[in-house]
Length: 216
Image (cartoon, rainbow, N blue to C red):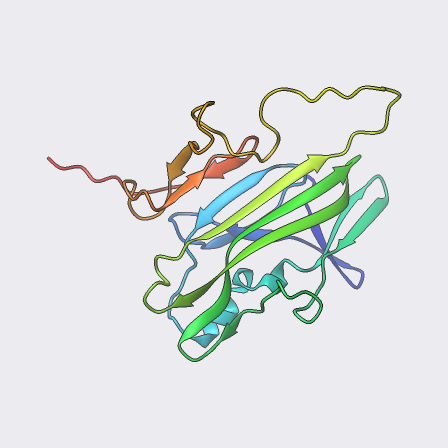
């Protein structure tokens, strides 16, 4: 299976995102398959809340995503650079430890890959940050989403008809009349916690887990 890769001065390695294995915690990693939409929520594994773990959880640092993405097909390779710094873009905030908190930790990231003929054409990244403290580190979830959008080759058609229904990555709604009603499912520690819900998006695989409580 083809995967998204990272290009580093001629060295190529698979791009990996955090993954759940046996619990809600981000205990493992997985290579990102090319053209497979993914949505995943997990809880960063804080064995101890200190500077070492703050810096060591590399996927909490936005720099982990500002890299050179690459794909190869039939001997051809494309490289799309997302490298940048806070000095060049005020929206970029580096992760840092201030003595008591892990500041500017990535809480959610959405990467949109534009693909043409099996090769990357462009990449767009959206990131949300949070300041993680000792009080909230075991409740602060991390969310990763990857969306692949294919570019069709040009044709001689003079009219483009937009298909009815959802577009890739669009939030699914449960009421066609109300624009504020979205289809969501629980994630986190408790299934009945309405504050911990994730919206279902069209064409994106979503895996979540929560704990049900039964009163007998």
